[in-house]
Each structure stands twice: as structure tokens, then as C-alpha cells.
Amino acid sequence: MSNDGLILPKDFPQIQNDTFLRAARGEETEHVPVWCMRQAGRYLPEFRESRAGKDFFETCRSPEACCELTLQPLRRFPFDAAIIFSDILVIPQALGMDVQMVAGKGPTFPDPLKEPEDLQRLRSKVDVDKELGYVFKAITLTRHRIEGKVPLIGFTGAPWTLMSYMIEGGGSNTHSKAKRWLYRHPEASHMLLRMLTDVIVEYLLGQVAAGAQALQVFESHAGILGPVEFREFSLPYLRDIARRVKDKLKEGAKDIPMIVFAKDAHYGLEDLSQSHYEVVGLDWTIDPQTARERTGGKVSLQGNMDPCALYAPKEHISDIVKKMLEGFGTRGYIANLGHGLYPDMDPDNVGAFVEAVHQHSKRMIKQM
Ligand code: 1CP
Image 1 (cartoon, helix red, strand yellow):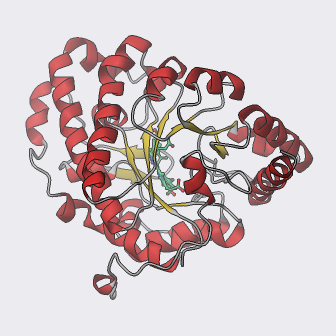
Image 2 (cartoon, protein in one colour):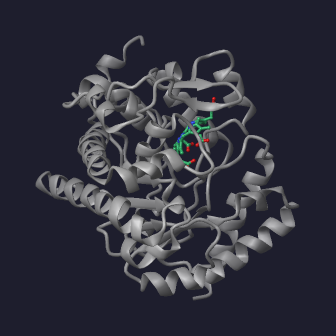
Image 3 (cartoon, protein in one colour):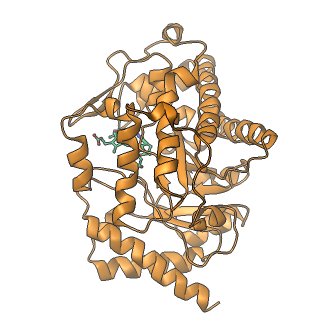
């Protein structure tokens, strides 16, 4: 890095489009804000070019590279928010685990946790500034370079999702190794989840101090848990994270919207809507009206078009978006996909999605 040491988290440019932040708080907006999970990703040719031949986690450790990748989708599409380019697996790395990105395979832990004794291999006290300061630098740099166009979202993986990667050693269909811990070693599981929660709280606070204007917590592996396990091994930690982050931010008179995305966890929607998060993210397997009823107007909602709908012709995408907007309503709503974009998606169709959200919602709000 050349001179990022001189770039400080202050004197950020004035925000021009705060639609996303207002929608997160349930306030009135002129249009429904929209962004996409994995909007900085391999579906963009410029992303593939920037990343070509470079190690994934090396890229994550370069604030300049993260800033560039975060800004790329904003140059193409009028998204209402940016999400910092990074990965959820930087936390297991901060705890001392080796994680590599293997081409064609995804994230891989050469030496995953096997038994509770292995917890001793993890750092008991993580110096978040030292281990993850590169993410904070990337956020500060990006917040300056984004020039106030849209808010910048920081993020983390949730404890259960990170625990499952640390035990599985990578992606998995069954997550049976990690679930084995829940049934066989519940106390060690809680110990690991608590360790992760402590690091996550510090990590999110560091992101806000660096300039993040909203925070999303990804519980991507919620759906592999049943309702009972979700209530024991996921929900308490999700709540603890939001409560502790909010309490600390209040001391500095900061009000940062928090989003929880617990993929495939319908059974948890009522609980999630009462967990100190302003926004609940939804996958595509629930219809908008049901989600509104189940969350009882307590939170804003984010989601949830099936990412695969982006394979449809543009006119069809527009119809799907219209129905989605009618289902959620235009207040307290942030349009997004129900999960991330896939690498083979056509950037033009992503543009059509964004445009459809803006056009239909502007018309609907004017007619109100
Ligand atoms: O070389 C590459 O480009 C690899 C693809 C890739 C990308 C673009 C990975 C590997 N991570 C990322 C960036 C990333 N990861 C972002 C960037 C910002 C944006 O969204 O635009 C974010 C928010 C993440 C978060 C993340 N990483 C999640 C949570 C969201 C989700 O998808 O559920 C998860 C589960 C991961 C792990 C991960 N990292 C990468 C892959 C392929 C995976 C999934 C592996 C698996 O479980 O099979």
C-alpha cells in the first residue's frame, strides 16, 4: 500500500443519496433503494480482470484493491448502497486458522477443527486492530473514494456460519461435521460461538469507527439448523451481537442500521424481527406478504428476488420486480436478491433489475 496510512476516518464527503439508510429506519423515501449481495463479483468482466492471477485473501488484505472492487459495480449501476469487498472468513484467519481460496473449490481450511481440544489452537485474545486492520483501512479509503454517492455497508459472518466453516473445512451440503458438535459437544460449541461473538462485536465496532454506515450480519448457514437448534446455537448470538454493538455505539451517539440475513430460516422470522436489528434480510423462499405478516411491521425488510430470475428476459424481470414491490410495499423496504449473484449472470440483467426497482417504486410512491 502506498499512502493509506495517511487516509483517516474523518472529513468524509457529505452523503448525497441516503435512501438506503432512510428505508432501513422505516422512513419515507422517493424510491425503493436497491443493492445486490455479491454485487462486487465475478459476473463483472472488470472484476475478473482485476482479480486475475491474484490470490483471493491477498486481495482482501490490500485496501486499494478492496476499494477498487467495491466501486466497480457503482460505476455501472445506480445501486443505492455499496458493500465493502472482503470475505466472512477473515475472522477464522484472525483467530489463527489457515484459510485458502482454492480455484474451482472455494474456501478451504487445510487443518479444520476436529474435536473440542482443537479450540486450544485458536487465539484466546484477538487484537482486532492488528489482525483485521486491513479491512478497516479498506473501509476508510473506500468511504473517501465513494465521495458520498451512497452509503457503505460493512459486514461479518455470524458465529454459527463461521463455526460451520471452521469445522467442515470448507463448503458442505450437510454440515454434518459441524452439526455433530452441536449434538455431541454442546458446551464446546457454545464456547466457540462465544469466542466468535466477542471477536465479531469488536470487528463490527472497528468497521463503524473506520467509516461503515450500516452493518450486515450473514448467517448464511441458518437453514441447515432446525428451529430448536437455531434458537439455541444461532439466535442468542445474533441478538448478543446487535445488543452489544448498539450499546457501544450509543455511547458515541452513533446510530448505525444493522441487517440480519439468516438464510432459509423462516421459522426464525418472528424472533429475528425482535432481535435489535432494524432490517431483516430474506431469501427467496418466502413470499413478501407472509414475511410482512410474520415480522409484524417491527422491522424493515430486505430481499428477496430469486437470483436465478436474472436469467429471465428483461421484460420478465421487470414484471417479477413489480410483483415483489407490490408484495412488500414501498415503505421500510430495501430491494435485493434472496442471495448472491452468480458468476455467469449477465451484467445487463442486473442493470435491468436495478432500473425496474427504481422505475416501478417511483411510480408507486407518486400514486400514493
Ligand atoms: O475469487 C473470487 O472472486 C471468489 C468469489 C468470492 C467473492 C467475490 C468469494 C469466495 N468471496 C467473495 C467476496 C464476498 N464474500 C463479499 C463481497 C462483497 C459483495 O457482496 O459484493 C461478501 C459480502 C462475502 C461474504 C461471504 N463469503 C459469505 C456470506 C454471503 C453468502 O454468500 O452467503 C459466505 C458464505 C462466504 C464464503 C465464501 N467466500 C467465497 C465463496 C465461494 C464462499 C462460499 C463457499 C461455500 O460455502 O461453498
